[in-house]
Length: 338
Image (cartoon, rainbow, N blue to C red; front, side, top):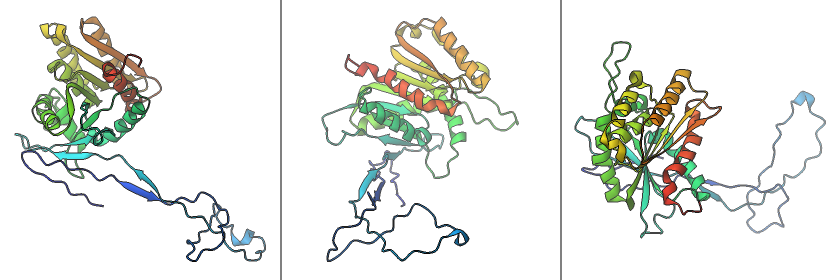
C-alpha cells in the first residue's frame, strides 16, 4: 500500500496515518462442523505434519472426508500508527520530518493536554519506545503522553550519516581525510526550539510546561548537549548509552565549563543516563567516567539517576533504558502513590 504525504509550506496540514490493519481468520479447532446449512462455509484441512516420503509411507487407508473447520469472526489487529509531518526546508537546505504518536485518549478527551516526549532517531526507536510506553501506561507508571520522533524524509535516507551531522556538537575530522560530517548539534537544537516545538505546540493539545528529550548513542550525546546548552528548554532528559567519548571527550570539557557557570545552580530538571557492561570497553568506560564527573559537580536542582544495564551490548540497552528512563522522567506527573 502506498501512502502519499502532503509537503506544504510553511507547515503541512495534519496528515493522519491510516492504522495498518491486518485481518486474520483464525480457526479455533478442527472439530467437525455442525449439520450442513443451505450455504455451508468453505472447507479447510487442518494439517500440521508434512506427508512422509512415499518410500516410507504405510499402505493408504480408505479415503476419509476432510473435517470442516468452523469459521470464526475475523480478528482485527491495529499496528502502531503515527502522523508524519514534513517540516519546511531549513536555511542550509536540509529536510526533516517528525513522527507524531498520539495517546489512546486523544480523540475521546478533547479537553485534555498531554506532556511530550521528543525522541531522537524516531525512524529507528519510535516503534520500540512507543511499545515500551504502552506497557508502562498499562501499569499506570507513566502518564499519557504525546511522542514526537525526529526523522528525515525519503525511503532510502542514510540515517547514519544524517544523524552524525545533526547530533554531534563538535567537528571530528574523519580519519580518511574526507569532508567532516559532524558538528551541527547547535543548528539542530535551534531547529528543535524554533520549528519543531512550536509546530507541535500549535497543532496538538500539549502541556507546554513539561517536555522531555530522549536519545540513544549519538542521540544521547545530543540530549546531554541540549541539557548543558539550553537547560530550561526541557524538564527531563533520557540519555541511553550516550556517546560521551565523542571527539576525545569533548562533552567532558563542555560539562566542566557549564558546571562552573552560574547557570548550573539553576538547572531544574531530571536526567537519566544509562550504559551497558557489555558495550565496547572504551565506550562504556567513557560513560562511567562521565557519571563520576557529574557527581563531582554541584547541581542542587538536578534530579539525576544513572543505571548500568547488565548483560547487554550497545543497542540492547534501549529497552530497559527507555523503560526506566520514561518512568524517571515523568515521575513528577504521577500521583504520590506511584
